[in-house]
Structure formats: structure tokens, C-alpha cells
Amino acid sequence: MRKNGLAIHPLNDSVGAEIDLDLSTPHEDWVYREIRQAIDAHGVVFFRDQNLDSEQYATFARHFGKTIVPTSDIIPAFNGSSEIAEVRKEPEQTRNIGGSWHTDQAFRPAPYWGTMLLAREVPDYGGDTLFIGMAAVYEALSDGLKQTLDGLRAVHSNARVQAKMTDGKPAQPDVTHPVVARHPGDGHRFLYVNPAYTVRFDGWSEQESQGLLDYLFRFAQRPEFACRFRWREGSLAFWDNYQTWHYATNDYQGERRVMHRIVVESDPFF
Ligand code: SIN
Image 1 (cartoon, rainbow, N blue to C red):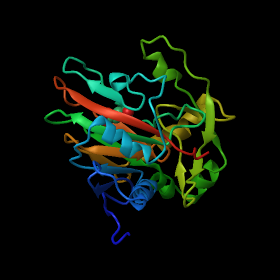
Image 2 (cartoon, helix red, strand yellow):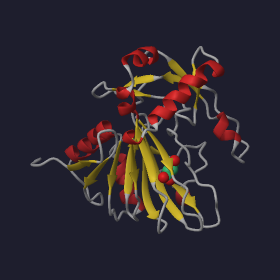
Image 3 (cartoon, protein in one colour):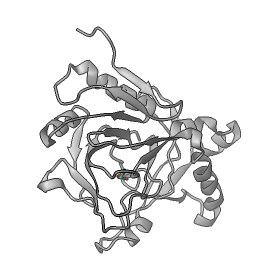
């Protein structure tokens, strides 16, 4: 029987909340429902000091949908796992993964809903991940711009990202998604464009789209729409790929950083 709700501590009005909970033991269903509601409301939630082995981690993830390791990913499966992938940067590597503002999987016809990262090894300093809440960004736009954007679709492509890869894989076919999407839970709106994958508005040329997309990308990066998460070993972040952007900072050269990632497929938002 539920007596008290979860202890959820928002980081600001726009994005991010910390939840005090030990994820190593099973919980009643209402706990997972409240975690999902917190992600719906805050875009990303964080848990500290989780001492989870791979099975405990995957068991937690399965409460939210089907766990997958996306096949076209540059992030390899961890020890051949079909559920956990590894985001690793070695001391001699200079480039990191995710070091630009992006939304995971936006180039897919039905983007995967959730991503979680569990910190296994962290540098002494740096390596923070930043998040932006795209519902707060949409809310802060003028009514006139909201009206212009409502009903538009945008073309998303992984061609620019894929061109930097050495795996020789072709880019995925372009897809279109609504520029302003509605959350299937409470119906709140959020802006669904991002600098990594959105190339133009559907029916507009790239040149015509560039000015407005650049404006939206700059506007979204105002500090009040963002939070910055400082990792410790055992920290876990769990975010909604539809409503957030994220950015992995690359400011810890000469040190190792290892994250275990689980992607969760849930009902697509559009
Ligand atoms: C990613 O963008 O998927 C990686 C994020 C991180 O390592 O903080």
C-alpha cells in the first residue's frame, strides 16, 4: 500500500529532477509509474549512488518498455549484451561521443523513447552532461512564432553525423516529424528540432529553413532552459529523447570515462 510518494527534487523550472531511491531492490508498481511521470514532467531524472550489477540495471530498465541496443550505433554492446551498450572514452582518445547538442534517434521514423546512462568510471573532473528541456523552450516562444511553427514538419537526417564516421555505413533515409509535438500523457507541447539531425522544414529548402532553425537552436540554448549533471560513479540519468536535447562535455583529456547505456522503446509520441 502506498503511503508516501517518491522524493522528487526538481533542478529548475525547465528540465531535470533528482530522485532519492535505491534501484537495486524491486519496488511496487506505483514507484515505476511515478518515475515515468517525473520523466514526463521534467524530461530527465537523476539517481545517485546506485550500486547495480548489469542484471539489476536491466531489470530496472525493463519496467519502462523494451530494452534495446540500437543496431546502427557507434556505441558497442557491453560484453555482447542485447540490452546494455558502452559509451567509453579512453585516456588517449581526444574525441568523445555525444559532444554536441542532439536528440538521440531523431532520424528514425519512430524515435526510441528513453535513454539511461549509468556511470561506471568517471574522470576526476569534467565529463558532465547537459540537458535542455524543449517543452520550456516551446512555452517561451512568442504566440506569433508558436503559430508559425504549429503544423509544420521538419526533415531529420543522420547524413551529416554519418559522414564523420569511419564505419562506411550509408545514412538512413530522411524522415519527417512534427516541429511542435504533443506529449501523449498530459498533451503539453514541446519543440522537436535539434542541431544534429534537423536539416530543414518539410516543403522548404535548406536555405529557406536555415535562418529560422538557427534562431530556434540559439534560443533553446539559453541557460534557463538547461541543467548540468555532474557524474559520480553510480550516478544514473534517465531521459526522454522526445522532449530533451543533451550534450556530453569533452573537458577531461587524459582520463577515462565509462558509461553503460540502455535504450528503452516505448509507445512513440507521433
Ligand atoms: C550520448 O550523447 O549518448 C552520450 C552522453 C554522455 O556520455 O554523457
